[in-house]
Image 1: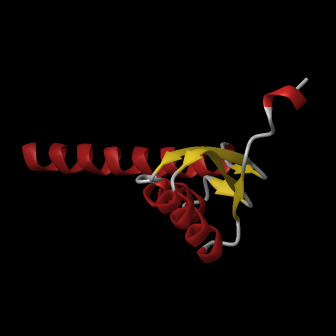
Image 2 (image 1 turned 180 degrees about the horizontal axis):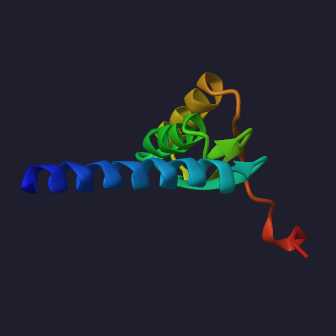
Length: 104
């Protein structure tokens, strides 16, 4: 009797998890997002952050997103990392902020 209750409980938890996952994918996908990723110094976490965002895309949470690496003071090493990521991933772009005197 206890085993049957335990198995029923696990089945209900599994079913609830499947429904929650399906509802999240169907109800909350982000389409056409522009993601601005600030980068400084050597860009140590850039590759990890890009891969994390791309894994969301593969899971269906993001769809047709464009990722922009915003240079906020990248070193030569960081710039090389950013250029490599832009080369490897077609939806990753590099940009620099406009000078402050032109922002209105």
